[in-house]
Amino acid sequence: MTGAQATTELARDALTSLADGLLLVDDAGRIALLNPRACALFGVQEALWLSLPAADFYRALAQQTGQEQNLAPRLEHYARRAADLPRLEFALRTPEPRTVEATWFRLQGGARGGYGVLWRDVTRDKELERMKSQLLSTVSHELRTPLASIKGFATTLLRQDVRWDEATQREFLRIIEEESNRLEELIDNLLDMSQVEAGALRIQKEPVRLRRVVREAVEQAQRRTEAHWFETDLPAELPRVWADPRRIRQVLNNLLENAVKYSPDGGQITVRCEVEGANVTVSVADQGQGIPPDMLERVFERFFQVDGASTRKTGGSGLGLAIAKGIVEAHGGTIWAEAAPGQGSIFRFTLPIVKELDLRQNDVRLGKDKFNG
Image (cartoon, rainbow, N blue to C red):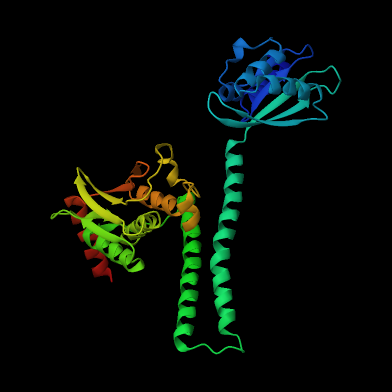
């Protein structure tokens, strides 16, 4: 193989190995190269398109967007004016929903020269932009309400022209404390969510008596509302689970808080534990409006909230269920929702039961820690 041939092979290998899709078109407007990434992105085979007109490829591509009449002419127009209109973004429907950014460039610089197109999948980038925008919107909205209350009542207490009796002062201070707690909870949720996203959520698992954790969470939830009543259904024999008690209490708190938010006054909220094989399944059921079937999976997405009057009334950051999902999965468990509109919702999650071998190993570890301490 000559040096020139080796260089040509090397160049082709480089083009076919690009992380972005690549289309090369010759002087006659026919396809000279379609790299593997472009083939995978659009679900096509290079061999079927080589030497065919690029215009035919654009029309076939436009069919995948559902906008053939509009997109195909635009792709050809951008190809003719690559120097002036180098970039175009469009959405694919097949083989799977994607947002693609196309960038044109001339190969020879002449008006009749060949050109290339880089196809970049920007779906993830668009999702990150959407999440950032939603984060800013959510955080600014959730911060504004407690900050306004704190500032308003603090300003009222500081007024020189009014003397407030002790009971009124204590009520104002109680409200300031509650709103400060809301701010603290929002900040904690943001920190937890960042740890979940980074895979750095701190979990300190140990053998846990779930009965105690459940009862403590229910008692705390009961203290926060007088408009709902709670029922626990726990088996007589409830084995210990391998878990971080603080984090599991956080999961229960999030689920119970959601149940209270979306249940009518006087509604019942039931917490149940069931032993199923090697796991304990914990469920929290309410008597609220329920969740549409097509949204059962999405409720665990960051910032997602089921639209409705109750959602707009109660507000919230939309992070609680996403954090709960991250915590449960970090324990090796699963979490899901079951619901029917108008019949309430049931959220379930599983935790692994502690095996006898795990108990013995844990006892040995604790013994060593005690000896070393």
